[in-house]
Length: 502
Ligand SMILES: NC(=O)c1ccc[n+]([C@@H]2O[C@H](COP(=O)([O-])OP(=O)(O)OC[C@H]3O[C@@H](n4cnc5c(N)ncnc54)[C@H](OP(=O)(O)O)[C@@H]3O)[C@@H](O)[C@H]2O)c1
Image 1: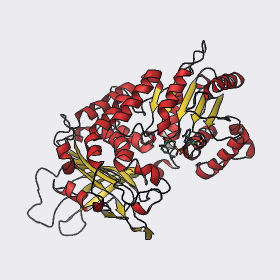
Image 2: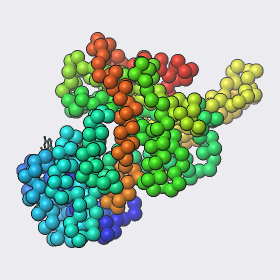
Image 3: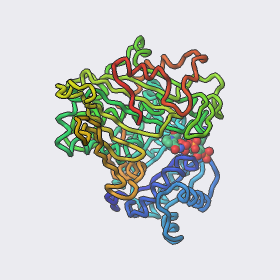
Image 4: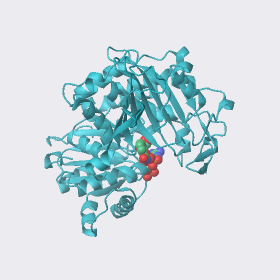
């Protein structure tokens, strides 16, 4: 990572600093950036939330968080202490206007003492219901602009979920737009910060040999899978309001689809990249309400076994209704109606308590146009398959047919495999490190634009509407530890294709 310079110095104000995201992701990422000498100097974090805490208490909580969640541990107490000096805590309710006069004053004092200049980065890590009031309060307090005469910049990072449907996302976009200009707004989708996700673009456009094949002439279909083996853990109440379609497809999986389907941008800068992604969203065929059952399948896990251990059904999880119809599995068939992709279906699926933890993009190429070996039915060549493994086992593989050694002509698929760990050694940086770094230097390439989020909700609205109701007796419809409901097989098999078993 290219280190940030003093010009990028900033005060990072995290709202919701006593919460899970701050300890699990944000502070461990900042610590790793600090120890990798990537953070700007000077730099300061002001954690804000209602819980009463002193700076020392906040620092000691964050020390524990780093011990638990960071990739690299402090080499000595002295090194940690230097980082800990950047962590400050200010207690108050971000939804309450009474917080702000004091916060404005405190922020100005800290900036003066620490010499961070006028750059400010706000991070909304509170429950999402707080985003609209929080954004409004920032505007009312004048915190949407840099301090007078400072020449600084103010930016705001907004965590997912950005709305829970089209109406709420539009309402949030409106509030945000009434306070900040679009260039100031960074809507996070942490998938875009993953090395393997960025590599989709490098793979496509830094290699001349694949792009000529990347279209309807050569690609039969694309499968994007995000499978989890875990259930909802302690987040049952949250998940009841969300579900697989909202939690995974509306953001991460549609972003992956865009990266696979987009045209090459003129440059790898925020606007050209995001313009191309918007064009993909525009090209996806809208789902007619009457078509929902044909192109979308939902599921919910019942009890079963995952990795040999007994797992309870979704309805038995804490915080979940005994009659819940929330989707813990969702599969979709989408068509991208443009010159490049006409007739190439994109199959998307995600689920909890599936047979394997995996995120991958599989590009299935067409069979060879003429079967030279067809006279012998034993000699069947499988079409080429390219699999981009997002996580775990980060890497990619290309399968092709090879002659099985021996006197007979037999063909077997073999794989060329690239593994990140083996090729580059070590673990790649966490997505949040890259995303925080980009926001500090003002690069929004890996963040979602307002219109993209809006279009993603708009696309899924008919499915969300149809799935808001349902016959509770039809769920659960898949066993924990399997690959999802039988209807999902039908979704793909009726087109003569099959889901992969990653
Ligand atoms: N956790 C993750 O790994 C993760 C991953 C991706 C996205 N996110 C998103 O990030 C955001 C934060 O997630 P989280 O898991 O950190 O949430 P969290 O632990 O439930 O809450 C974050 C903070 O918000 C404050 N808060 C809660 N209710 C409040 C209220 N009614 N008024 C004012 N403050 C309130 C709490 O602090 P006080 O009680 O001290 O005020 C808490 O520290 C959410 O939008 C979530 O969807 C989280």
